[in-house]
Image (cartoon, rainbow, N blue to C red; front, side, top):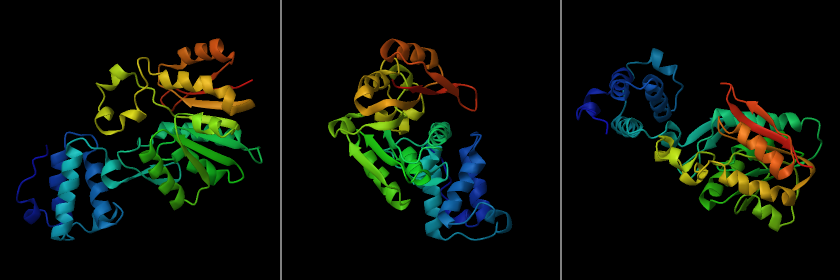
Length: 289
């Protein structure tokens, strides 16, 4: 737990002194400076550049207490996104809570590939399976307004956040609660394109990862081999996808070869593995016959 001097409320009454104490408390983290400035900027409702010219600006007691609380949470390891309740994704600012996975930059690759595939399609039906915060579905609905976008999640709490995000961004998405593509199958809905960022961390590995302390296990745990939910979704694909539908799945960095073989055996589909910016396997793309 963070040890902030009891005198912080009195001593850290300016931006300069508050940031100095906060940064010292967060080190040796590589992001100590950025984290402290981001949190104080949120409290003061200013951009970080404001601090350069206003170091002597005095914080009131409420601001000082709020900043101290945020720094304590960050020092304990809580993600910045949960502390401020927001995360940027593509061109969106999304509400996030511990009910949803924090959107990652790598998942923007899944969105970009979907946007590329739908560039020349006037109107298509798209399913986002395991939508979480709604990041993918909402971005697609905004950038492809003539497409029909469906989104599912097994977590009612996650869908409550996704619906709030869709309302804020005026995105037309049909949300359904249920397991994987089940809610769409039950309604007889078939789509031209299906994408999913499902849990793909092996259960044993999750025990050792910091992410497992804070983000919902339901959105992280991919079973013994990390592929349990992907296996289950593959069985559903013929019932929810139209012939010739494109399927895009986000995967773990070492799962590309296993997924390619699985798709050959299960669906007789040849997959393309797309790397992320670090060169790791990240997206599986195939067409369902």
